[in-house]
Image (cartoon, rainbow, N blue to C red):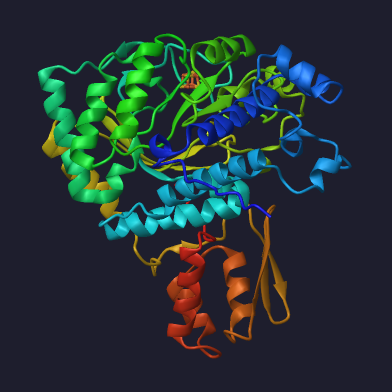
Length: 468
Ligand code: SF4
């Protein structure tokens, strides 16, 4: 039996067999179209070859049937995967590993920030579910280089305002920019290089975006990833940007695609191979993956229902598009916030929490404010503040301990590992006792050190409430 050699593509596409690259790129393109167009999804099973040919797709639909057939009884789901399926699977595994690496390898030298970020990562796994938690990179930095966004998506998950101005790369701004990046590098460490230069903005609205990003790569070691909702506005500019970005350490860029018409134009403009490392975020009505119910999407319930064909989720189950546990820097207004992902709800309608907000005048002021904000983040559990469980967690007291029940999991804590577990559960459920008070309460059964160890584990796991 012949074995199929699978080739890593992310860093080595230029040296890979062109036929292999083409195969993966065409499979990717096929699945993008399938995800985008409900009529195509409906018609495909009747005449796979004819329907995909009519849509201008090159991949052989029969060879990748197991990737698109929604029929659980389709024999393709039980057959050995074709070379195209295996190659595409290998490529996707690489991309998942790349994403996980962005989250796990961001290393901060600031003890308070490092511990806080890890708590946010753990909280998000519990609060948003394993799948969503795994998809968040918890970037350390996001930067706005414009005030507002020209695109104006009705569903904008972070409620971008209208474009009011861009922040040009003037000599004065360039000095401030480089100074601020240097300060971030000094305060946060290498993790500062795990960021991107957009938020409630579209990067391509700023004609100097590439210059800012080149400074970022010079100072922080890696070109930031780009996501734009203007994929066909200036293809020559995007091609140059994408190549520069990949040359300087970034692997994946993204297009946010708002309509099927734009997707078709985009397919006509770029070859499948050109977009191998450009993820398409499909936002058109009827797309297979429902958009997040956050920001403007959340405030336009009827429009969201029409677009997704689903009922809006209650606040306990909403999601987010925010993926930063770190600094959200707004250069045009010289301000920054410390933010972390959250479910979109009444309090945090845009799907992210704001833990602190500051303005600054110059680089020195930025350094001082940043240090103040980050040094307020506890490395260890504070001893004298009331401890509460997260709002989404229901405690259940058991004879020998307690359970923490949330939408996504149930965790059991029993007295096998710590004798005062039931007492601790009762105290945490009460929600007004500090770590010191809880430890003293438990002392007849367990030592202060034992109680502190258990409480610190709960704290580090993101189970205790730290909502600002
Ligand atoms: S989703 Fe992106 S492109 Fe659309 S309005 Fe919001 S920030 Fe702008």
